[in-house]
Length: 278
Image 1: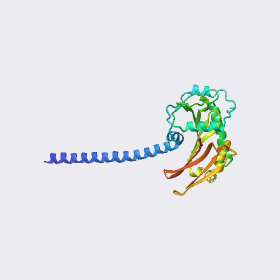
Image 2: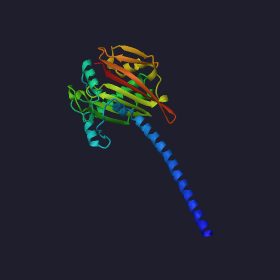
Image 3: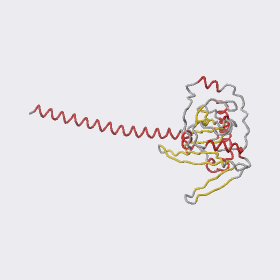
Image 4: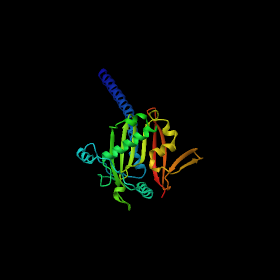
């Protein structure tokens, strides 16, 4: 009887230990999964530039891993002299913007004749950031930053409209500086920034970025100089929008704001965009 009692007690203890172990694994796995999901959410938000492309209806079909293909990058960065951008009409700019927003798939490619190479595109983006910082829309320290943490990919449309190929390409370049990520969409033939996305903790951005929208858009897209400014208000949700239009009113610029919280920290995403009115 004693032997049976000991075996029964041992079995009960073993069963209890197994239950406790299962609960430990389950609870530990839950906390790990929750932490992992929070981490992935933060990483996806930090890649908002790429997410914005997908949400706009574009499909990123192929990406060039520039970090692993150093020989190709070296070729792209040869002949890095000053880029003389093409001069195109407002009507053609509007047609290209309409093609960009058409939902056509994107494919990456190497620069062609008439398009900026990688170094020229990165330099153009740095110039844009420096100018925005000098005008107070980005931290003043950015006006002298060398921006070493940069990724850049050149895209064109898979289904091309009746527009010369070299006019359809855009560089998508992300600069990360002190927990601020700036993603620029630079038209490869003109060298102009046609879209900008700024992601940062709220306390890392100057107040002027959100308080002076008209001046912000005119600074971001200086080639719209001479156009008008529109103010529209949505009474239903008490929101408003400021639009800056081009001289011929074929292009319009606007800014959209997204606020979110992650790990008890408040973030802001500002998306400055050009759109066609054709």
